[in-house]
Length: 100
Image 1 (cartoon, helix red, strand yellow):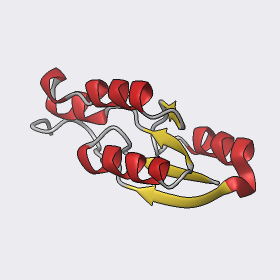
Image 2 (cartoon, one colour):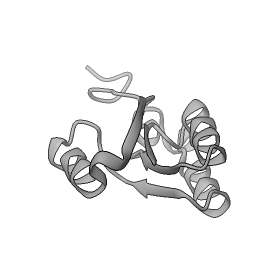
Image 3 (cartoon, helix red, strand yellow):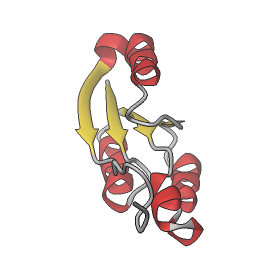
């Protein structure tokens, strides 16, 4: 069984990854570190992604923007019916904060 978690490197997303993994599921994490783009490099979640990749054996990271339909389709084509849960926790920003 597979769980798909968008925003997997964020605070809540990373905990969801750990929860699904503890229940014996493989976890596909979709996260493109939009926080670094939106809020600057100090807000990056790359450290969290690195921890998940080291600590959670069943975690598989996909650096895909959730607006990338073809990228998402490729995940569903690869994993198909084995995906049993989808949890959407990603940050969706259009443009950078503080710009018009």
